[in-house]
Image (cartoon, rainbow, N blue to C red):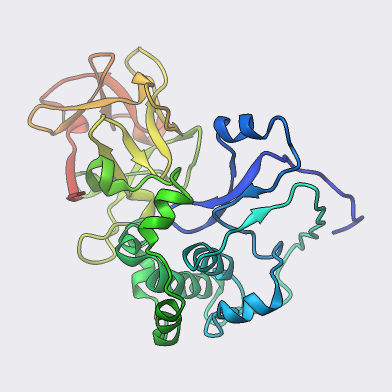
Length: 320
């Protein structure tokens, strides 16, 4: 924004999102990259667009229902129209030979009624309610605070979906974005991992981030805060979105961290032992321990059934 310098980005990206419904850039799979090796300028099918980088034929934009006019200010519209295009018989593509310069400002030049978080949550919830069918429950599990946000009247958008004979969200997941894993389909548990009144917590960290514990802050019912949302898979992974709790060494006192989930990575596989109250590494006789959580975060120590710092309970909504 200061000198209009043009900084290029990778050409191997497509738009995506996690169950928190926040846009992100995904690297194409190795299969997709291999297919494109002989023709690097061919269009890239993308599950989602970045809202400022979008063009569409005017006539079809009108037939498709334009934008949801009951969304406010900014945010969520790219999510909504991405779902709508794909589910209503269209497709979205990134054109590699196009060139777009986006000036990132230091702050928004406009205001958000009730705050930007509230506006984004309202808009995103409208999209989820109209287009995601029962899969919206994974969004509410990831961001439980949104259940308290008033999303307004969506009857007109629901009627539009019927009029256009749009496909279900299940079709979108299976045919457009199979990389987005559905927690209930591969997980035996989905919820929070507790120790007394505290819960395992990402503390806002992402990849290569430490884990800690924090007072459990339930948003009502069995919904939990997104930083405390974990799923325990049948394969033994402890997942938070697309990250997995990972052992970083073989010695007692080693910290556990969040890293990208990798199929076959035994350092990410855990076993529930001692009547399912302890979390033991698949490779070693080491259990997740909160003994030094204030200094180091969660660590592993030799499994001791009598240790209160290794005892975990599970406030869980069962997956399908």
